[in-house]
Length: 188
Length: 426
Image (tube, rainbow over all chains, first blue to last red; front, side, top):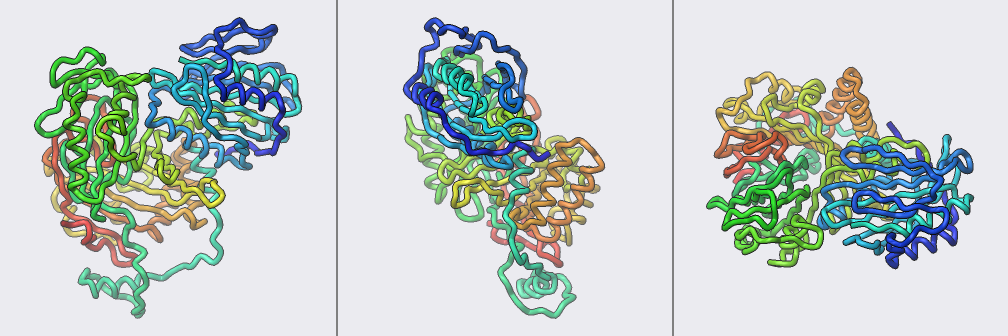
C-alpha cells in the first residue's frame, strides 16, 4: 500500500530550534522537577516531561514498546503528539544502519517529507544520538504543515530510544510544549 | 518493508525509450562459439555485451563454519550464535562475515575448526576457553579483502583475540555486545571498517509511518532486516518470503526444511542524496538430489520451477541456490515488483500468485539469473544445527562445521537456457 503522507515545507519556529539546540547540548537532565503544566514520564530507563493534560497510551510495534501521548486536536484536526519507542538489540555497529533506515523511510514517502536537519546530538545518558528535524504535511487529507522532531538515542543495554514529536507548525503553543519535551529527554 | 518497497519501487525514474532487445538468436550464436550448445533459431550474428551474465560474484568455497553457499542474500533472524565465515568469491576477493546475535545466551567454543560459538548467560561468568558471554544483540558485519592472505590475517586476529578465548568481559559502556563488536571493529586488532553492516527489524522506520500525523501505514514495519554500506550509504532492505508462499508463486524454492526465498531491494543514493531503487534480487535455496545439478539444462525459469517436482533431500548434501536480479530502473520491472510486494503483504493468495507470475515473467524476460550447486561436509544445509530454525546468516543456511565448495554453476542466457558459469569454478 502506498503511503499517503505528504511532504510540506514548514517554517521552523524559534522555540523548536531552541529545543533542538538544547537537545544538542545535552538538554535538561530530566531528573529536575517538571515545570508548571508538565509532569514527568518515566519509562524503562527513559524519562522526559510532557504536558500534564495530555493523554498517555501504550502499544507495541513489532517487538518494541511504544508510548503515545497526545494533546487536544489542533489545526486541521492534527493531534499534537509525543511518541516514545524503544527498539531492542541495537548496537553501536547497527546504529548507523538504523539511521540510514530512517532516512530511507522518510525519503520514500510520497510526497516526500523534508529532513531539515540531520545531525548528531547529545542526549543525557545516551551513548550516541541523532537529531532529525522534519517538515511534512499532516491531516486527512494531508494538507496541514507539520513540523516534527525525531531523535534516536542509543542507550546502554543495546536499546534504541526513539522520541518523535510533532504538531502543526502554526500551533505555537504546542510547539513550545514539545520543545520542552525534547529538551527534557533522558535515557539510560 | 512494504511501504518502502512500494514507494521506492514505484518511484523508479522512467527511462524513456527502453529498448526491447531480441536476444535469443544472438546469444544462441554466442553460445555456440563458446561451446555451450543449444540450437539456433535466428540469423543474427551480432555480439552485444552479455547482459545475461550475472553481475554478482558466486562463492567458490567457504570455510570455518561458514554457510555453504553464497551470501547474495541474507537472513537476519539471528538466533544465538556468533560465527564468522570466510568465503572465496569468484571475482577474486575474499569475504569475512561476522555474525553477532543472541537469544538467551551464546556458548563459547573456539574449537579446532575455528568456529566462534560463544555461549552462556553472563559476561563475567566465563570459565576458561569456553567462557561465557551474554550477547543479546542482533547484528553483523562483513569485510571484503583482496586476497586470502588478507582475509586469513583478519580471521587469525579474531581467533587469537585473548578476550574471546578467555571469555573475559568485553563489555563496553553499552554492554557485552558492543564490547565484542568494538573488539572486532577497531579497539583490539584494528580491522578495517566494515563494508556492510547487517541489522534486523524496522521499528525505527515504521514509527513515522504508523504514528505520523498523516495516518501513514507501513514504513519499514514489515522489514525483516536490512543491510547498510557505511562507505556508500547504500541500503538493502530484506523481506523473507515464506517457502510455502514462494512455492505458490512459482518461485524455484526447495521444499525441504531450511529452504528459503528472499527478496532484497537495493537502494542507492542519487546525486541529490535521495534513495532510489536499483534492483530487486530474488534468492531461493534448497537441497537437491543427484541428477539435477549437473547438466544445467533449464531453458527458462519455468523449467527451473519444474525442478520443484524433483525429489529433494539432504542425502546428497548438495544445495542449490538460485539468484535472479531485476533491474528496477526499468519501469516495467518496477511495476511488476511493486505488484508482488503489494500482494505479498496484502495477504490475498490470488493476488500473490498473479503478481508472482507477473514478476517471474519479468525475470524470465530480462533478469540475469544464476544457479549454483555446492557440496558441504554436512547435510544440514539450510537448517539449524543447534537450536531454533532461524539461525542463518547469509544465504544457504548455517552449518556448524563445514567446508563447502561449488560443484557447478550456471547462468541463464535468453533463448538458450542455462549455460556454464565458468568464472564460478575453480
